[in-house]
Image (cartoon, rainbow, N blue to C red; front, top):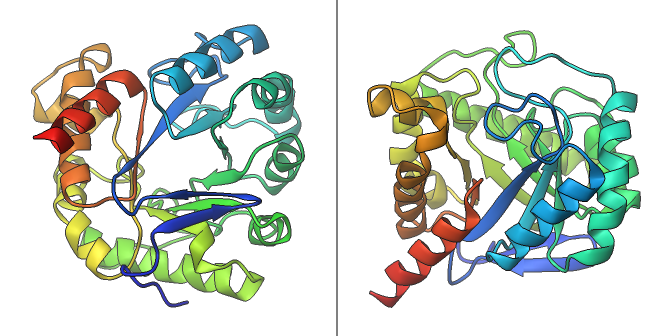
Length: 280
């Protein structure tokens, strides 16, 4: 699968598309879970989820990313049926009210298929099409956008062999081949190097420093860094609920280095900081 930084500036997702030609997109996080590390339980009912979605859209999010299962380290895994019982009631009312594309944070093909039937446009797969063998088929059939995230937490799925950047690029290449074989177009794909999914703080910082390299190799990059542990450790113990300013600093760095998208909790501060940076 060939990627070109010159041409791969439109992210296609079903009947929609968004451009990252002139700026970095902002994906707003909405977790309809009881146990996500930062906002678990806040938007657990459909009505609360709709309120959160409308705020994120008003604050300037380009994409809404909804998660119904926490993927934080050590969180409890749930079945697709339980995930859908949390997700679909919220997705039904949100998809009727907001105008921006909706992404679903799931690695299960059953969840992805149902969500795409209820208004979602993107699947954000934390296992990059490598865990569920039907996921690539679902994305291809529905012509959905997809986030292929590198994940280093299970050697049975992907074994690390080298430094973090080499391993990340090898993960991307493996997932890109799966996508190509399933009939997924390169214009449907954005790549996430998986900060915090089996990376320590030093490796997370190295991933960020390597955003320009990954972009040069033609991989459109999404960075999911919001409030994560590497920020707290870099700042010597700042807790998760006080990491928004540092998250914005990382987002601005990603924007300056032409990342395709950043995924954040605090959309308003991110969007306004990026607008100010662009004006300057």
